Length: 305
Image (cartoon, rainbow, N blue to C red; front, side):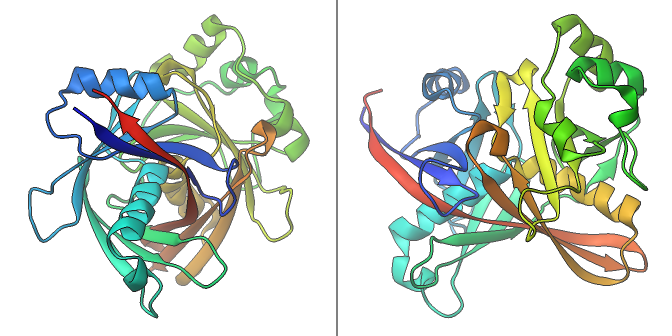
């Protein structure tokens, strides 16, 4: 069977930077094992498989696979798939004054994505995170985490921020780093050190961040590593940003209202990415969060399977 696919670069308006994504259309008939093998063939951090929605009022249903398994939700697959479907199905509506809403059924639930495009710019998508970030319990050892990345223990921490564990559908260890110079030189060390540091969390992804940025227009500089999922490093991680929303609200204690953070990631990989995170605060608590970014199509082709 011939199945169409596209690749996109996500959280960027420029080809060959940002986070690459493969989207397989016409994926009916593929079982879990076959989707995993196709994801391994693309060898990207995530591959999306598009299917007809369970509810015909929605645009599509998707499954999201990384090289060693499946995710219930992920940010750059949501952004990239929504942009692709809008470009294929309703390009004129996307360019209209109000844009278009792409309703995607994911394992975590229904995600409604607003897609729009201004003249001379790449399409941009914004969605409300389907599950608010919650702090999880874990016996994290600061010295063990520092050793796993080859840095000194006193480099972990920012004013008001501490080592923590959060999830908005996909759990991440969040590691505040004192300065960008330290964050630029971290790298996962010996597998034994990694296991010692992160076995208490089930060896999930680890998201490191600092408030020293490469661009004065940005607020956070980040990196994400998840070697147990086959992801040596990720250029842009929307699900980690969704988890970070909880930490940002808890540690920064912003006043009531809407606050936007612009997060840069992927710089150390030569794939700079830009993710916007909107936080809605009421009564001192996070009540909603939105993730936004651009995406561009890079290639299209056919799978002969």
